[in-house]
Length: 103
Image (cartoon, helix red, strand yellow):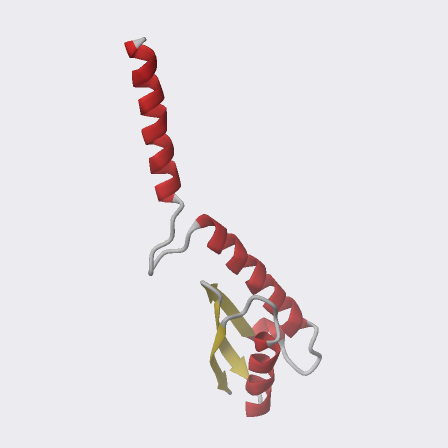
């Protein structure tokens, strides 16, 4: 009986550590947030790729907790603005940091 309680307590403690390991902090994403951000990044890249005026290979996209950071190079300032506008239109994007530079 005592052994069974010890095993049950051990399993409960282990499950608490597992759940705590998946939790997010201000500088680290949780597992669910990581998957959400990966989906947002993919949607943004696809949207930029589908825009014929933009060269998607020269624009980098990174997402952290719904905040998308764009970086890379474009030929005209209007292209940088267009990339930011397209990104803001993607579902799940909370804000955009547009660090795209003009060549």
